[in-house]
Image (tube, rainbow, N blue to C red; front, side, top):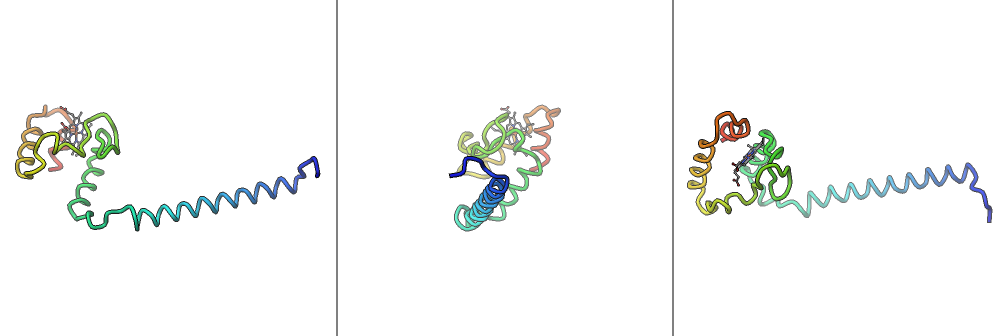
Length: 120
Ligand code: HEC
């Protein structure tokens, strides 16, 4: 067996290895895309109101301070369970009144609360 790795052999290993791992990367990316589209997305639950909520969440930058189902920043309370924590999950009209009252009770100088107010 040869003791020294020639330049040609090193180059071939480099290009071959790079190509091999690029192909693995592309394959895993394609599989992830397929999996998200076909397996892990709840298409039935993605209603128009869910899409509007997501848009509001992004446009008003709630994620900069809050998390939802653990995703986001940890500066402010988790919002995925706020309806349950406040005991209003069963009645959307009571929930609206409770949240409206909470927002109106916030100091007017608070930019975050002003954002909340303007978004509803
Ligand atoms: C600048 C940071 C910031 C942003 C942006 C922000 N919030 Fe908040 N939010 C807070 C903080 C801090 C609290 C906790 C206030 C308190 O406990 O008095 C809070 C509390 C809340 C609560 C009450 C949660 C609870 O369990 O008491 C709700 C609901 C809420 N925010 C909704 C929103 C929504 C919806 C948005 C986006 C439209 C948003 N917030 C954007 C900082 C922010």
